Image (cartoon, rainbow, N blue to C red):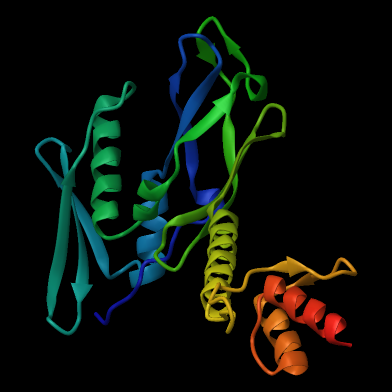
Length: 247
């Protein structure tokens, strides 16, 4: 068996269940999960139906998923334990242990990177501390580290978006902001190198007589062109006054 990367889950392979409803009825939290059939399909897709197997022990509490390694000529096993469900405990236990064993192989492990999903009361129907609305994942995206970067969840009953998350956009905004800060700092450092040759003060931005904002670079170039040295606005005014007086 050569290394085969197990792909990330598609939106239609992810299910939502209500995690908790707030006591004040202002909203509820959602959890993302996969079912055992999803694990089976991805194992078939990745390794081939004849190259993996599963078996259970401890009355279905544990599941071992084995994948055939043709290079080593042996089965590679990964095991985990599950929990009983409220209905059909034995069947639910087998399904739970398989899903967890599948996560050991990397199936759906990216779901652990999900943000806290909060659905406000106005986007669902909470009555007497209960909510019977269903929720569908309609969009999911991942970054280069297989972490969830975008997520959209829709209320099945209303068809409206109940939750939206775009980490990529947030990160892009932060990167742009950081870039602007660095450029500004770099410009300030560069321009602070300009000092008046007469008084020794550092040149700063200033307004010309016509209202134009002049940077330290522009001020330095102006004074060098007229007086042959770098001068601050105050010293330029003195030089111009002295020039008018001598004229």
